[in-house]
Image 1 (cartoon, rainbow, N blue to C red):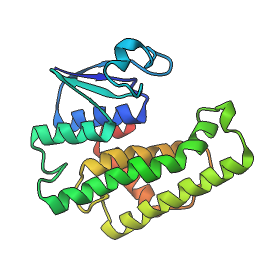
Image 2 (image 1 turned 90 degrees about the horizontal axis):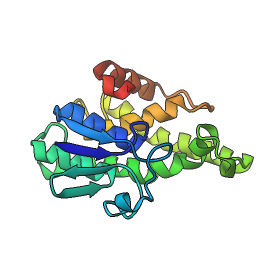
Image 3 (image 1 turned 45 degrees about the vertical axis):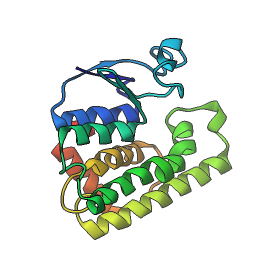
Image 4 (image 1 turned 180 degrees about the horizontal axis):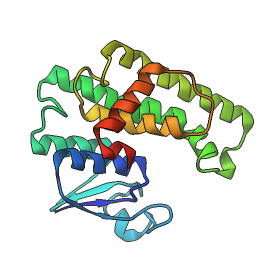
Length: 201
């Protein structure tokens, strides 16, 4: 059976759990990370030298990086609907996954640490204002895409891009800050909430 190392509250662990749910894959999960077993434990570092969750263990295969884990699970299950086999369609899904991990994640880091985690190191008013503005600007990119598709990130059908970006949308909507009125994102969040309990979990 698959084993996932990481606390369920982690957005990156949540991606993997949601993907397993979509694939009807049974798994065991161990709590690692802040508030649980420390990821600088030598036993964990042997699996992931970056000391980050999640880690997936599938027999003798050990994977880290959440989006890579999700790709592996979909490809192993042959789920072309979630991760297309055709290079152009697959590249479109992976483009938005990589944008989430690179551009979008970097934009929300300061604001999230300040407003949700209440980190003492992230309370500078100017940096917080810049962080909120940058986060909202990146979400504007997603708003434009959703206005074009009228449904999911890559078009009419739900894909792996919707798992990773759906959880980012949830984080943005729940963070206590000023946000632009993005109607396409609001409709998208409602669509995902109606589709699956994994979005709400």
